[in-house]
Length: 204
Image (cartoon, rainbow, N blue to C red; front, side, top):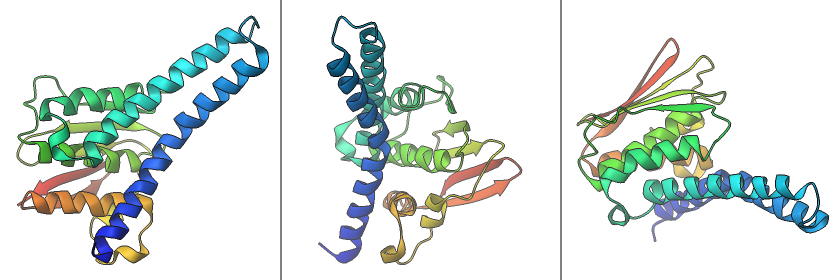
């Protein structure tokens, strides 16, 4: 495997582990609490609730990331919207991020476009560390916008134009992978920032 492909695989694995670590730790904490207190303890109901919420969060994140980072043939494009809704609502139940993806929008045109949109959602999420709205319009331009008060130019966005993967971290690796997906569709991702908004668009 060429060095750049190997490096990108490493970065994406690191990102995947990072995104799942919190939910896995919460499941572990709930199991430990239940084991220590016992099923008859007043704390048992709290532990079971923690386990259920954390397991649901982890499942939502895994399903989303499987489509975003896995084989294009593993899921149908029509699954992109429901998986994205579940990812932000159940994967992050404290509600930092809200998805604006109207149900009447047509689904992504292909599995590769679905993958691109989900990776753009990850980039938009990285630009909103304190939460905000992620707007998705899956037409030919595959447009995704991050909207929020605490908007940042994340490492992921910097990775979109990276020429050397050796200096990238896991988050900027997400941007490099997104750029690769855009190139596979015969285009590139252009980003533009205005007051309170960062827009990502697939340009041919």
